[in-house]
Length: 208
Image (cartoon, rainbow, N blue to C red):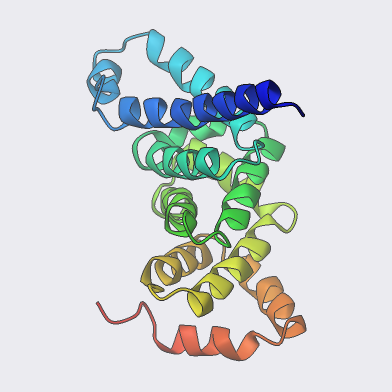
C-alpha cells in the first residue's frame, strides 16, 4: 500500500472509531435523551435502535483497536439503557457480539469495557423476565459462546491488576447462564485453569 493509501486507510479507521462514540453519547443522553422519547412513544426510537445495532454489527468486525474499544463501550451502554432492543437481532448476531466482547477481554486497553459489555448483557438476562430477556437468553445459550466468555473472564481476572470488573462480569454471566458453568469448567480443566476458577469462586464477589 502506498503512502496515500495508508493515509486513507488511517482516516477511514479514525471515522469508524468515532461512530460508536457518537452512538454511545446519544444512548447515554449526552446528545438526545432517548428515554424521554421512548416515554412519549416517539416512533423514531425503534428505527434508531435498529440502525445503531446494524451499524455496530459491521463495526465490531473492524480489526482496529480504537474502533474495538469504542464498540465495547457502546455495547456496554446499549445493554445498560436499551437491552431489550438487542432481542431484535438474529441469534447468530447476538452470539457474535458476545464472542467479540470475549475476544476484547484479552486486550489490555479495552478489557474493562469488554467485561462491562458482557456484564451488562448478562445482568439484563438475569434480572428481567421479559420476553426480550428470554429471547436473548435462548440465543446466547445455544452453542459455546457463554462457556467461552466465562473462560475468557477467568483469564482476565488472572492477568489483570484490577480484576474486580472481570470477576463481577464472570459472576453475573454465571448467574444468568448457570447451565454453562459446567462446560466452562471443563474447558478450564483442559487449560489447567480449574484451580484458578475455584479460587475466584471461593472469594465470592470479591471484597468491596
